[in-house]
Length: 556
View 1 (cartoon, rainbow, N blue to C red):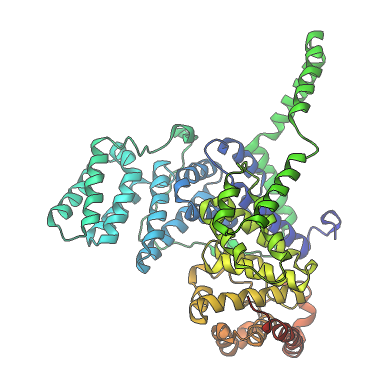
View 2: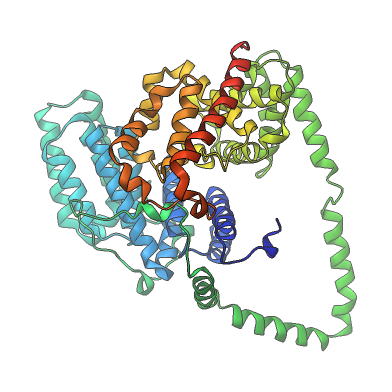
């Protein structure tokens, strides 16, 4: 159904706009860099950042964890947004601090270092107060361990220059603690060397670790809004903002955002300027008119509207993939093609297409996709988009092609080449799946269980921080969806993944029965949910069971 023909107050329309908002925000965040941040910001403010507050924060944190080297860019982006919409900056700071504390409790040093870099650059951009930085250092150095000292060293490198300017005494006190740790010699030699390196960096006045890069100094001091937050403060991370919820006042809120957007972007003044410019151009000299066609001709010569270059690129990629002996050789040849920024999706789509055309799945394609994901973050983003596109159009694929595509993405997931956040595109219910999508989910999950083991797969799916990502795969909104999911996983031999779901359905029936259904049609079916859901789930299970039996004969 055409989006323009839909009732704007309906749940279907709101969900469609929500999905479009999520994709747009993700796309803009994924392509931001030092050179284009000034162009990305106006595009970002075109999106409803009040409704999509949780989506924005989630996308930024996901991108930062995937590429910690871009942390200073994301912090600069947040600093600008924070001057216009401080609630967004505060929410991001809350979530970063909250997840940093959790990473420390779990002993996850890699995540802790990435997040502490984010905190450091938020302090550098004055989104967070410098007292938070001193609290972080005090917490890390009170009972020093190899990991905590290493995290503290990385943190001090990133925000040491700013602390030296804003609170030099606090920084000096922490360096005295570093010195005493070094003299005691109770920590690993490698960590001692990092402390010695930190003292050398301090001696050089943090020249290689500037607080704010010149190109990223985008906020005037008078416009900065600094949030006061302690490391031990109890905060509400508002995770419900990340998921779609029906808004009875949707149209009113959209009108309010349009007014806010006009204030942020000054659209009225821009329109007036455009009118003035068009009026002035009419009075311009004849010489200007003579020059205009020449300029237009030059521009037309630059653009290739036939897209022949793109066709040639796809042909070259295809021939390279099909003619290479090993994935290492193929990867090396493809990297030598000098793929321009934005063309990464061509390699991804061609790789998936070639994989789907094989009679049986070839591990060669999974290894090649894994290689590209680990080389460059843009390929991860491209495969993320490809997953969403393939799942949305999975009903168009024949069973054999569908099986190959599912096994390809399973390889990227169990090798951790692709973030597991792609599961947020899947909603497992009778209403929102087809027989093709259920086969895809079945093969995907069975492959993951085969390579990771059921225990580790369950641990991944039950990760507390990823609850919202897997909310569609293990729905808990109403009994009908829960029974459908339980029956589905049981029928494909992965019933062990639904133990918690079964317990919740068993122990809290009244609360679940009173919970609203996820779609507007559920109002008609809520009265007979106990009978119709079991029968419909059963029918779905039977169809998937038949899919399972047909798949069981296939092997790699």
